[in-house]
Structures are given as structure tokens and as C-alpha cells.
Length: 256
Length: 262
Image 1 (cartoon, each protein chain N blue to C red):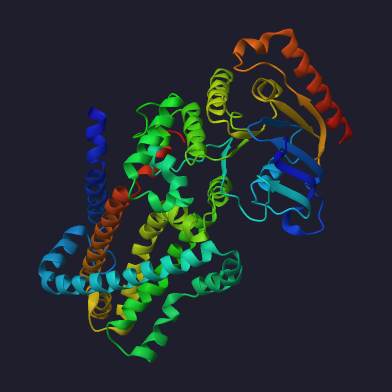
Image 2: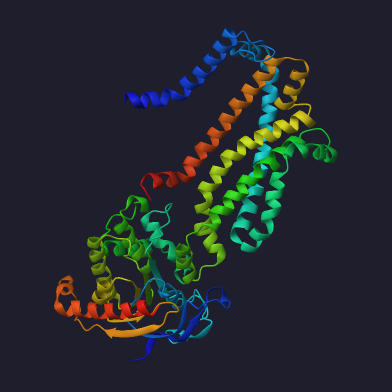
């Protein structure tokens, strides 16, 4: 009983403790606010700049969601293709791995060349950085169907489409949601990189401007806003995951 | 009596290449309504035989025929169950049972309109194997033995003419295994379905089958065939009679030879 209360409170207590430690360290070692502002100074900046933080955060949220939506669509489609055909898997694998190895920061200038400064580069950066985990995980879920399940269905004359819709897709859903949690944070990184380099709006742009002004507390305030948004979006994915694939967690708890 | 399942001088190589054959010169005839068991040392190609008979694999040479038809593609009159029950964890037990009906014709087209009829059929089947009222449970809420019972139901739901069992009781404890022997014995008696059981448990083979085939080590072929004459219905008690032990011992000798030859 007592233990369960502690478990519930733990996330809040640990977060509070983290900021308290940070504050104490800044004061005890008298670290300059230019190097590492204490949480109290960041809070002041949060309050002072709440208007621009709010509008820019909303913009970033939009960019991220748009890029993330694109990667879900594209990632699912490619993942299903790659997972269902050994030929495509063999052919596309080096391309996908190679593409994923490219630092996406290096892609942003190309996007600016193509689309100019605006909302497209952040959305596309978020997309290219976050689709890969979805492709890989969906493909893995499809490619690891138990051979016996396939035999049972094939012996009954099931088509590949049948096997895909009855077994493959439901089976790869837990993999898919696992990938979404990785992807959503990556999409954040992507949109902020895009905004820093090729946008007049968004948290990324705000950070660039704030650091040019040496407004370090504002930079940190913007980072805190990003972290909070990230937690929020992961929580949304978590919620949907539990609704859709609760069976996967429960079946593991039951030991098989 | 004509053969219902016939394999004639069948050779099979996986991947279709020039590798070592899994089975070579394999010939076997099973009569309609017969319960056949195939025993052999591990890795002798017992599972290959199942895949050939159901049309999941095409032989490199030789003839495979079921119900008088040459098998060239998956034949839809079979049901299969394996050592691993492979029930889908996101479906309830009842929904798992209905899965074959969503795939195989003519049920596929009738399922939606006649759902109640099929659900009743599935529930009757569950009751027969001792899973009454368990349809709403998820597979992971069932014990291993119960999952295997559900898996047997799934293999029978579309009323197949041929039931293929690949070591279905291999992963179960001895008591549960004997219970399930009786379940499958009763189901076969009631439906007169032709059964091919692949197993490495000689007692299981002798108790259940009308005829036991022994296979050699790879490349597999039939080395011995033994009619089992015990009257049906058989009681578990017969497994403790000297006659029973004698047959098991005789088969044991064939397997030992097959292993020694390998």
C-alpha cells in the first residue's frame, strides 16, 4: 500500500529533486548564469517570455506533428512492403541503412535550396529523421511471424494478403508503437534543427536568436519547453498504445 | 481399400537445390478414416512429410496424392496442429477458433451472415475438449494444456477431411498428455477424420494409431510398418498391458536400428 503510493509519487519527487539539486549546485558553486542558469532564473525567463515561448512552441508542435504524421504514413507503407517481401528487404536494406546514417543536419541546407526558408524544411527534417525506426520495426514484426502460424493459414489456401491482414499487421502493432515512441522524440529533434537553420518561427529559431543575444536563461527556458512537449507527446503515444496493444503487455505478464 | 493419402517414391530437397534431401524414396499409404502415426529419430524428415502431404512443399521427385488428387498446391481439406499451439494473442480463444473460417472457402463467404451458427459450432467444439465457457478468455490466460486443446479445436473447426498433428503433445507434462490422447481419440472416433500424427513418443503412437510407420534417419524413408490391432474404443489402461509393452518394445527396436544406421 505504502509502496504503491511512493511508486506513484516517484516521477514528481525525482523531477523536483533534480531541479532542487541543480539550484543548490548553482548557488553553492556560484556558477555564472551565462554558463548554467539556476532553475529559478529559468523560471523567471519562462514567465517573462511566456508569450513568444507559447507561440513558438505551438509552431514547433505543429511542425513536429506534421513531420511525424508523414513518417507514420511513409514508414508504415515502406515497412509493410519491406516486411512482406524478401526481395524488397534484400534490395532496400543497404539504401535504408545508408540513408539513415546521413546526419540530417547536413540535409537541411539542401531542403532550404529546394524549398526556401519557411515551414517545409522543419517538417521534412522531422520526417526524414523519424521514419527509419518505424520502417525497421514494422518490417521486423511482419518478418518474424511464427512459421507454424503461416503453415496453418497457407494450408487453408490463405493468400499473402490474408496472412498480412489477419496475422502480420496485428502482430507488428506492438513493434510499431515501440518505434513511435522513439520516432516522436526524433521528430522533435528534426523540426528544431530545421527551425534553427531555415525558419523564422519556432522554438529552434527562438533558441538561435536567444543565444545570439547571450540570453542564456531564455535558451534554457526554451529547452525546458521542448522537454515538456516531448513528454506530452510520448504520453499521447503511450495512451494510444495501451488502448491498441494491451494484449502484448498482458500476455508477457502471464508468462507467454 | 484405396489410399486416401498416398506418397509414392517421394524425394524432397529444401530450397529446390542440389543439397542433401530431407526425404528420399519415401512411400506411404494411409486409408480414409485411418489413424496413422509416424515415428522416427529426430531430424528424420517427419515434419517434411507433413508439409508434403498438405501441399506446403512440392516434392522434387515422386507423387503426392490426397483424396485421389495429385497435390500441387495447398489442399484446403486439412487441419494442422503443432507442438507450439500458435494461438494469436490479440484474439480471444473463440476468435482464434474462427480464424480458419475467415480464410477457407466456402465458410469465408458465409461467416459474416451466419456468425451465430459458426460461434455455436465453435462453442460446441470447445465443450467437447473440456474448455466449456473458455471462449472469451485470451490464450495467455490459459494453461499450456488448455492452449493445446484450443489449438486442436482450431484445426478441426472447418471440418477437415485430413488432420495433421506434428508432435502436438510434445511440450506437455505426462498427465496432461494422456488426457489429450483421450480427447483426440474421441474426436477422431466421432468424426471419422483421417489423422496423420507425427510423434517421437512410441506409447502415444501405439495407443492412438491404427498403424504406425517407422522412419529412418535423414534422408527419411519408411523402414517398418506395424498394424495396431487393439479394439476401439481404447482405454488408457491398455497402455499397461504386456501386449502393449511388447509392441512398443518392437517399435523401439526399429528406431534403434534407424539411429544406428545414421
